[in-house]
Length: 163
Image 1: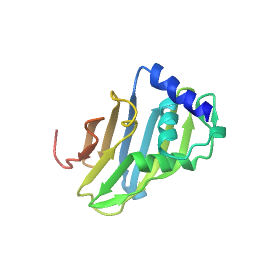
Image 2: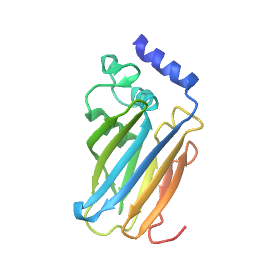
Image 3: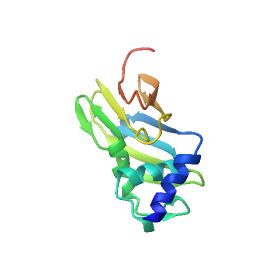
Image 4: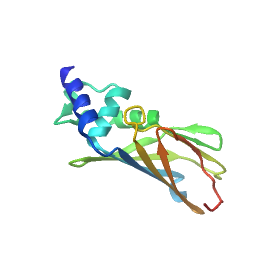
């Protein structure tokens, strides 16, 4: 428990940049969206400690090293999607742990026309008051970018419109 507390305090006091990046691309032949979430590994660990059940023995050198399914649980709590009025859950298919960054790749099934996409992005917003979550959406007729912050966590995408 002391290890978890020390990790939390260290990164709350000394990490200078608080940003994440998400891309969401519709792939018609796969009947759904490919999601790529990029986060600093230390920020991800800190938010996972606060959000999902991270065990102390699953932390090595300030990086989460436990079972991969916890990433899927974390993303589905912090990044929520509603497509055509129906809430969706993303499935994790790959995780890449680099020296300072963790990349999570997920898939969100969807068949049929896309009328509306609503997003709630709460990644790290409970921890850092200066958190910025960059978000890129792409389908066959749209490519849009959004900037989520602590005070701006929800967006109804304007599909078919130009910004």
